[in-house]
Image 1 (tube, rainbow, N blue to C red):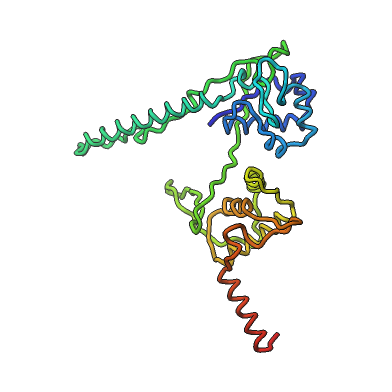
Image 2: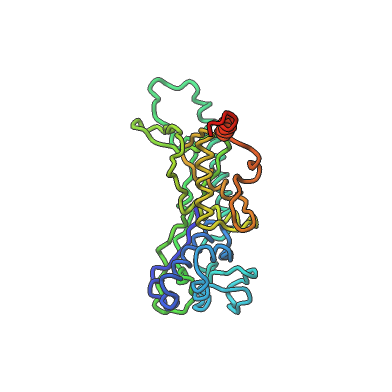
Length: 311
């Protein structure tokens, strides 16, 4: 897992002080995004606007922590129009895509060799001694990448280059959070491992969705980002509430059971269509013409009651 490096003297750096806490929060959050997605210092404009405000972005550019397209900093590359570049990113010990991919390739090859050697060793001990009960060490060949990640010792981990004589070697690092929420296959419950009292991993029983279930903030951000990348307009608060209400109703009508519902909701919200004026359609593309068994039963009952004059 890559890291976004922050110098331990960043808290008192002049640029940090001028930017202010709110803008530095945006700088830090986008830094973790850049490290996780290996963009080599490029902050997509869409991400900057989603995580922060226009005044915060302008402040980071004004103090020199970020560069917009057309900047005159000789040590930093030019971003595409609309994107931004984190000043000093490549010189501050931050992860670069080529280095991370090379390290991952070496780790994968090492695991392959270890597994091959382990299989050969197990084959050679097919008839072990009755007294040979020593466990095999690292039988699966798991490799810890953390030992191959160098600790940054440069003065630029705060995103600066030689502007403060009081800067000391950077040692603290902000770890990039993961927001991925993989989408399960239709009809298959999302699974989260759980450890029982015997130390073995057990699968919790799937259950129906509750009527008051709500998506997390990360679910909403992931769905909005996916909609933006697909060229769809974002969902407002009322539209999000309507999407969630219909999603819960659909899962209850279909009597679906799952361990977690965030991934399913993201897929639903990502594909939700809007009519002119921002009205949410009944179901996302591909499902608008389908009626659940519960809906068909309710409509049939209503028609029968009308015919018999009970309503």
